[in-house]
Image: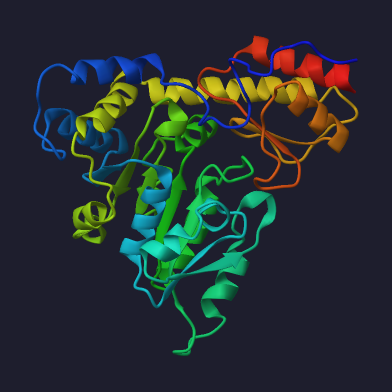
Length: 349
């Protein structure tokens, strides 16, 4: 039977990038819009946001703000590498599958070496294999391990798993980069402090979630090893990532951090995904593909069902991390939207 439901819906499950700006970020954005302020990050909002990061992470780190995650990851990796170096990452990592070659472009050619591992997590043995595979001058010298927290399939590295990889990196003289597009979701799920999941576990630099956590635009880069941030401001400027009106990126960040909304938003998104997983698990025709640990549910669906859900106006991806459907929850996801999706799934089946 043909559906008469609208093809546009107020809440979708394709990505947490679909969501709007959360109230706390918007409130601080509007506050920052009062009068003039110094440009290029010399304003009080940027200073306060950077200092708040240092307070929350319990370390005097270098903090930079850029427009998006692609720039954050790519410029950071470029700063850690020379063009003849290589970066070891998981074969499903965002820097490999969804950055359009930006890390290689920004670094003038640093090669990505792909490691394997169950559930989207790097296997230390396979990382070791890539590090020691060759040592001759004809091979791009491994310089960085890049890991994603939470991973591209919504799983988490425990502090012990992080330590195993960072210890391996230290043994071989490598640096460690963390793609933290959903770092806040990992933080609340594991019940650890920001410090425990980053520099105390051996992470050198974190690209921290902004857009997926309730902001309209902007990511933060935290160099826990300040020496690695030398001249990074110049790299941002050259790449077109130095925002002239920086306060409109940093003020929403301050809103998230100062009010605690960054953790509340993440906790809500995780809780909604748990509810979605629970509802989907009762449908025999569906198969949950990975352990649901944060705000994404990966599910195997028959192709005719996928086609029918698309036709009814639902949006979700089927090409990220797996050949199944990825259903993402965000700070604004509601149980009503989940119930409506599940009802349509049952009806279509």
